[in-house]
Length: 339
Image 1 (cartoon, one colour):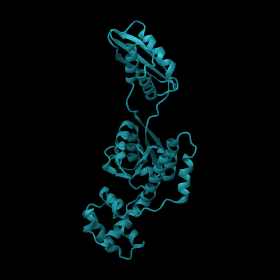
Image 2 (cartoon, one colour):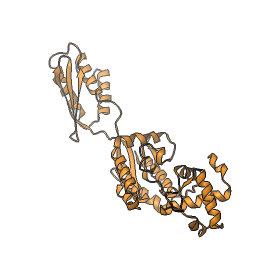
Image 3 (spheres, helix red, strand yellow):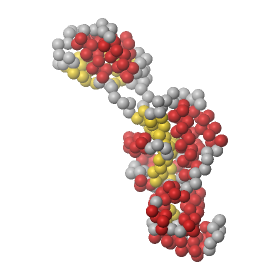
Image 4 (tube, helix red, strand yellow):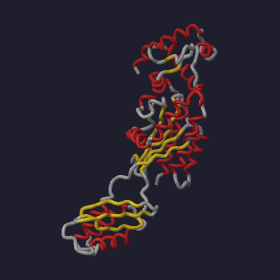
């Protein structure tokens, strides 16, 4: 980042120590605090440097106090250029591995573990699992129209109005429904589509041409990619740190998390990333008002296709050095476990 060229090595070290202190305490950092640390310079020198860094837009004073906080620009500079990311401990690796091993719902388990290890709210965007079908029927809805009704094993019912082929013989709606219902139970819509196409192409459907077309078109009405869903765990962690001073921000963040479609849209953009992606404050339009940071990474299925995103959201004073490798490793583990 170009601004690094505008500060010397000593100023860089003072800035680094200030940000690291802020990330630990969440409080404005004064020159006296830094002079008592590892820096071998006077409080006066630190004060002058802090003033220069403020002029560069890297620090700001929240009130009359002499302490300073990093701005969003300062945090971005720190994360991109000065952050030292440690290796993930074996204990953390074992905890993440154990949370997904043998679990029926890998993503739910991974989200819970991610929240627990980072003390933040965790987010997982995943393609919605498609429930198997139980029954399909066709009901006349008017001239050249029929209602296609799908009943799923989980009790969900969906229906669509479709155009029917001209000249459809009497009883075709009943025949089409009976044909499908004898074959769909326990299969997803996608599996039924493949089976129907194969039977019709091989003339094994034992249906006349118009009824075959009705069957094929009726199932096609429900085609399309599965809509993504959102898993959120550990919102309680957002209230634990400095909650009294941060209630407005936390309330805003809770409101943001309720807007699930927007959360999915924002996080899905991170699917294009090769690894961990970090949004700080206003860099993410959804969480900008709550002043939050989001750290996410994509995960893949067995064919190495990116199928979702997982990560955490919390205040901008997240422990980036610890959270980044945890998110990265969790994405790796989930990718391995998705069979």
